[in-house]
Amino acid sequence: MSELPDLDELWISASGDALPRFDPAALAELPEVARRYLVHAIAPGTPLYPAVRLRMHGEIKLGADWHPFSAEQVIRWGRGLIWRARAQMGPAFLHLAITGQDSYVDGEGAMRWKLAGLIPVMRAEGPDISRSAAGRLELESVLVPTVLVGDAVQWRPDDAHHTRATLHVPEHDGEIELEIDDAGRILSAVADRWGNPEGGEHHLARFGVLLAEHRSFMGVTIPTRIRAGWYFGTERYRDEGEFFRAEIDEATFAR
Image (cartoon, rainbow, N blue to C red; front, side):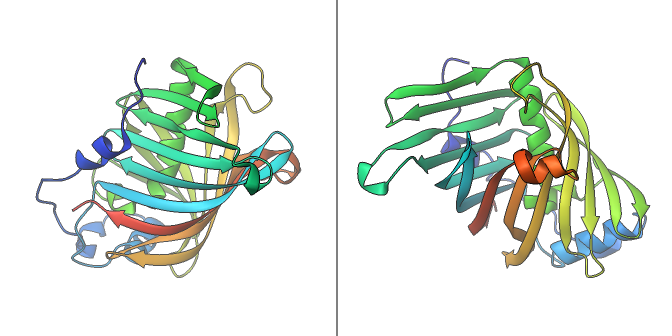
């Protein structure tokens, strides 16, 4: 991949088509836990948006230290995602930052990051990066729950508060496990994701996202406080797996 995909181009590609609108009655055949989640997340009559544009801030763990970041992200279902960020390194007066983006577009994943906008510190692509990024996209579908409505997603309940969703992203099929409370709020999303959290060979490892502070934007309710990392559900998650904490400040859905 010689050139990075463009965030604005990915966003624009989501516009133009008339969208069907959400009808809770269409969920009658779904498991109750899945129905409860979608009815809470999407107001009746809301267009089934294929994309969302997010602005966020938070902390990201690089090595042993946490660093503040700001970011913009586009998720375009059927194509992929781009997360473009700036992470501050050291005191702010030094103006020393890492900038770049993670992307998964049309089946290809890539990571490109530079120090001070000049010095490459991360450049990665290839099958392992693409497979890992596909798993990320599947988990982040909960930030655009309108794409989880329809026959393309298969639901399988575990109990009254847990359900599995099997979904398709470009070049990959995957399963995510969702925890839903009595009101229909999503509390976590978990999957066996391809990656190399130990820094060695890639393999499947438990990856999870904790979700809280739900807010509504354009008829869609999503979590706006996110914590994510490897080894979810174990002590290793707390001690070494968690590397991402974010608050979503703004969400705009494609019309």
